[in-house]
Image 1 (cartoon, helix red, strand yellow):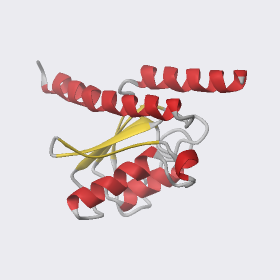
Image 2 (image 1 turned 120 degrees about the horizontal axis):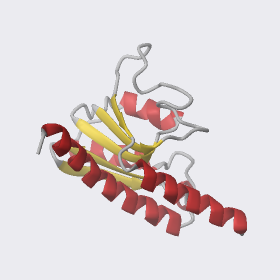
Image 3 (image 1 turned 180 degrees about the vertical axis):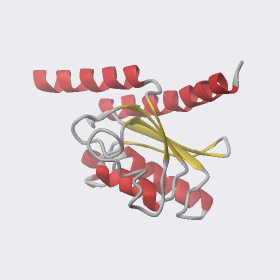
Image 4 (image 1 turned 45 degrees about the vertical axis):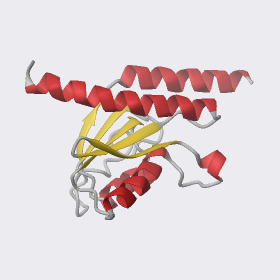
Length: 158
């Protein structure tokens, strides 16, 4: 197996965990976004969208995972970490990735309405900022997109 195949398999494994968290978010009535944070091959943080349940507009999956990761490492700078998100981060979360100095972002589906990394803005790797995040997109993107579409179809029916 080539190193590129190894990398895609590794990304697929972690994104699969993030998708499980996204499904939990959907079951709780939250927009189905899940996220895991990995450093040196170890899970150091995870989150699922929870702004409704936590009554916190900043309780996006990415922010919750970053908070856990910073506590786990005892440092707000997470330079060696890779964040896996089922959906392209919003502008708030993309800014948080830069502030945390995340090394790599891997995301599944693009957010064509609010994407802060590729679709609407390019915050995470902007040459205007002091840190640039490496970005990998499309890992299990079809599954993430399907989960989001089902969630919003069901919401429109009720």
